[in-house]
Image (tube, rainbow, N blue to C red; front, top):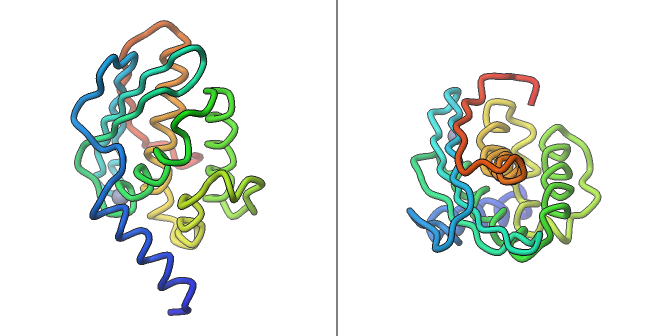
Length: 158
Ligand code: ZN
């Protein structure tokens, strides 16, 4: 393992052990989505609060592997306080990175960058993407005027 890989693993473990913005509820929540990744058995609940077009609050919870939970934790730090339009752009940057492309906003992805190496392991890509896909769906759900949605990621094309 290279020094960089070891550092990345350390950051992933830190997010897994001390997840940021992980809670079973969120005050003033607007949307609650549940996403599952049957390939790994990950289950994720994501709650968001959107105020004046800004992602004002986020809480994730559920049972998932270390990659899915650590990625959601790193994501929460990267996206909180951003306009939702910007959050969607950043989530697309992360998605493309997990499919092998160089991210265009590495500084904004923050600790999310440590998951770049996961792109080498196709079965773990969905784990790293789960929180980001749930967040994108939560924003879409909010825009539709709904308060909840439930998604199972069976489609390999993501
Ligand atoms: Zn997983």
